[in-house]
Length: 262
Image (cartoon, rainbow, N blue to C red):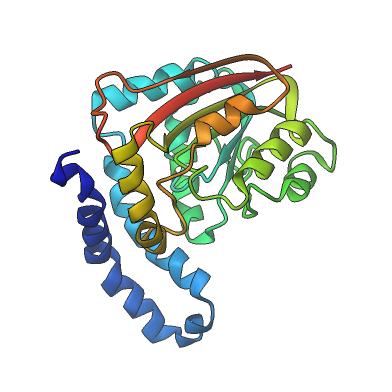
């Protein structure tokens, strides 16, 4: 593994600090009580980081084409977007096939950006096509209550884009979401960075994760998310693939998936 590939997370951490340290310090200056809740400091920091980095996340045409093929072609009905961030997934939704966009984002500092992204894609709270949730993906009871008045299996499509690296108890949370929230025949779509099958790359991912998660709101580089999803019971159809031409030494090694609930 090349040294530059192995230390790539260091450059990204430096970029995050350059973007967000001063704005976060200003927030703490005006609201010092936040020092008592480190999780809120992490959310403030991540809000500033993601407001900048998210603008370039789909800058290359190859990534745009991948997401177009994954999301635009398959998402339909009521769509639950896990860890929506700034709501950039909304631009990949086919408005003629998606009846409701439900971005789930625990960091409420991101919600204004979600509203703007959703509105640009044709989804608004005023017409009932947008519902922003502030709970975590692991809180399936709250998701059911907020999206369907307590009725199970209300969601046609669940989307996860660079999110399963962050959520607590990911395997249990995924199973509960699919079991209790997704309709039969509904689809689960994901685009995630995952644990590499290469031993040297995986070693680098595990080395950087304790540092990386501090600056990126709990994100882990070493989760075999695609394998967890594949091993779950209850799929009528499943397909996993990668990014064509992706460097196998990439510490952010990606996998995409489309799974249909039986």
